[in-house]
Length: 231
Image (tube, rainbow, N blue to C red; front, top):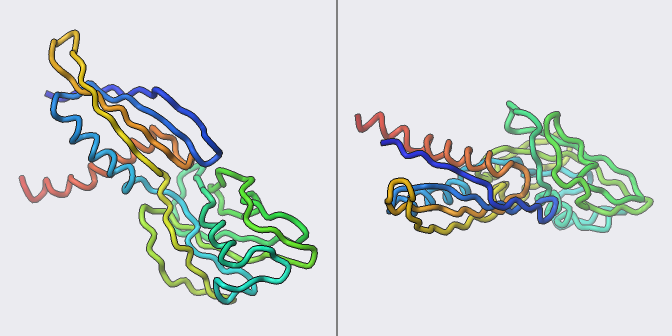
């Protein structure tokens, strides 16, 4: 018999522009199956939900991470770390999974995430995130590589000007997942059922319900190939 689940959003709270807490209730589930479902769903949410991230950058005048650019307060390393923390989201489906963005700002000014020139379809979640501060005689210009996926794998990327500097990190939109399992008596069937209470902390680049759907799709894609070898 096919089990019918209900999933309800119990709490949905925006903690900051890039931190969103959501709590779901999932059930009823047959006794003994709650842990199996919850544990696999947790792993899939943490490992299988893709997102966008800036993975490398080529800044004008920067030959390595430990340089200081004239007229720029932050070091190249600090700028790279700030770019790594920029959260991106897509307004609609983007076919290409590796894209280029650009930046060109003349001081004096603060450089914000909203100053990044992004490919069509991508936007920043927090436009007011500070990237760098430039004095009157400074300039910050360059290009950066944007990738979509579930894992960060540094790759060589050639440039006609300066080399691209890799930004170590990941672009997982799901930051933390917790769950608890409770048993309750089903008033209709009289059986003991389990209910999963799932807590998600995301970077607000994906809707929490969409994240769960993506995790379920990931699990299907992971196990479906086995059927071909077993039937």
